[in-house]
Length: 68
Image 1: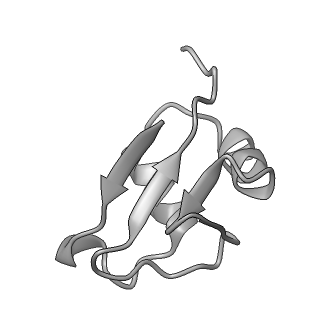
Image 2: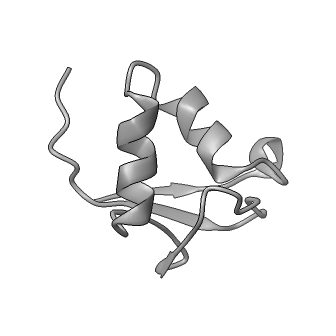
Image 3: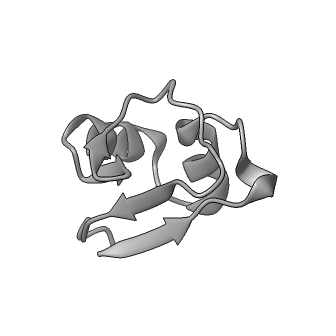
């Protein structure tokens, strides 16, 4: 399990765009599937791709099993 604390630079950014930028090389479809399945959460809650990050949010990603 990985936890990322959101700072000012990502404040107001959509979660899907933040993850595309952070997880370079991971297919977009996989990121969307992980969000839909609850493998990626914000503050222990499931989120939709339209969610806008806020300062001090905790982005939690469970072990995805993805290897490049």
